[in-house]
Image (cartoon, rainbow, N blue to C red; front, side, top):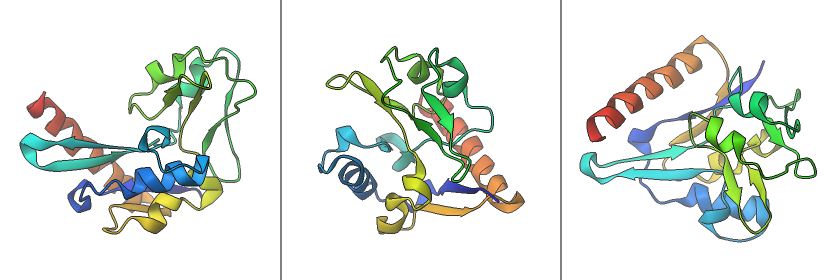
Length: 159
């Protein structure tokens, strides 16, 4: 069974450890700009939300890519970007409803969470436990949907 990332924003302290961990794991640099996760902070309501690829069942990023640079890894369930195929058109960044795909000017390619090949570093080092990697079952999927609904309502309020 697939595993999924579940975010609990009420636990996030906005420390941004996940961003630093991700950037270091993927690029060897402690640079949040290179991370494949972003912590969005909503000061008005005192909420921080780690935004990360949801590895959608019907991935808009993969469907819109004109060169097939995004494919599903059958072992991990992650949608992965193949750098050698990416032409930097940024269509996937537009199609992603979560803003979870990042374009890098220096390389002219995009990047996104690939679940660290089934062992997400951000989960292991999150000091507050705001991000977890769990079996995809009815309970975890319901929790993810509840988060999405809460986030949608908050976003509409904050505008």
